[in-house]
Length: 112
Image 1 (tube, rainbow, N blue to C red):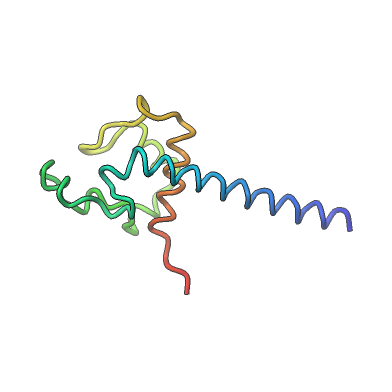
Image 2: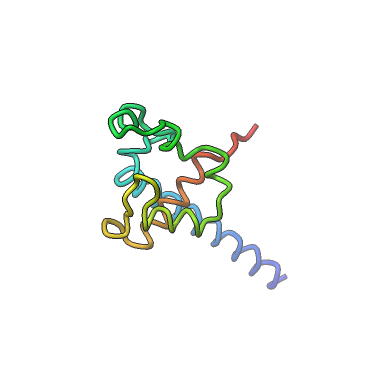
């Protein structure tokens, strides 16, 4: 009984910690990423036009982006990719990780 309770408690704690990370990531994403990628992660067409980018380049909800390994997304955010400058001088590693984890929820398939 104690072992089962311990496992259940550990599961609840990990879900709580994950939820806290996503919530913190939402704040970080809103403050640091949404200016280009939009609150919904679909990008800002006016910004894309002014930077002479394909609007799809700013869309973080695409299946191809969401399916990338977390480490690749963190690296792209840290170091930059394409015309995106790296964020490692503006965000801590923890903030980048939290923002990327939150960003992945934007492209998650809708639950029925």
